[in-house]
Image 1 (spheres, rainbow, N blue to C red):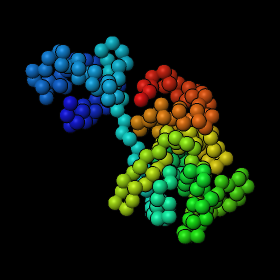
Image 2 (cartoon, rainbow, N blue to C red):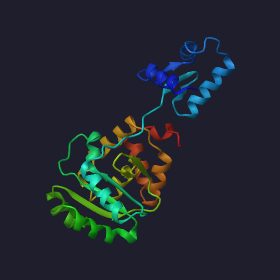
Image 3 (cartoon, helix red, strand yellow):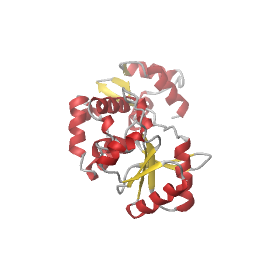
Image 4 (cartoon, rainbow, N blue to C red):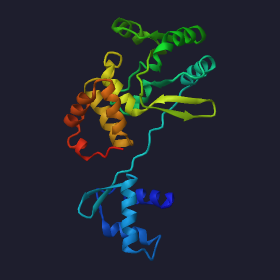
Length: 255
């Protein structure tokens, strides 16, 4: 099915609480005037498989498509990535900054943190190298005291931490570099697992963040819960979602 038709379908029905089989068939007739019922059934199957629509009742559908999240990369991220790639070519790492969460939180947090997570054996060497070459405040595996008294007072705090194995990350290609960033699935779990570091996003703010992320973007819950299990937060996160987003876990389709 041509992508342009899929996009027009999304635009036509995205604001509808539901639409029926006949309305969907009429939509396709504008593009395929001789559309057969058997072919139309395959069209519906294809839309479901691509998670563009989902069934909510007999012959009733709703648009389920959501875009993938595109992070805004700042100059500070590019500086860190450039220096990291200059010195460490083949290491696995991920970078993100808490400023991204302002899109989802109710209150805008002034104290932004850049987080760089790297393979365990490289945490020390990366910390010292970046600390010697960039004018930012670097913190290696900060404890509660550093988080409370030093990170909160820093203009550009950069936290260097160990990267959990098989953490969900993605590589973003840019003219300046290839940037390995934390996915939303990873960030959602880390907010739970590292509650002291992300203390300003706990409580009601966590609810806002989860609800807005799930509402706005396509989330791979298989990746999220797999990573949550490795961080020993799977059941806690499932209970949190069940409590604050009722019936959602019953409806989601695992990728």
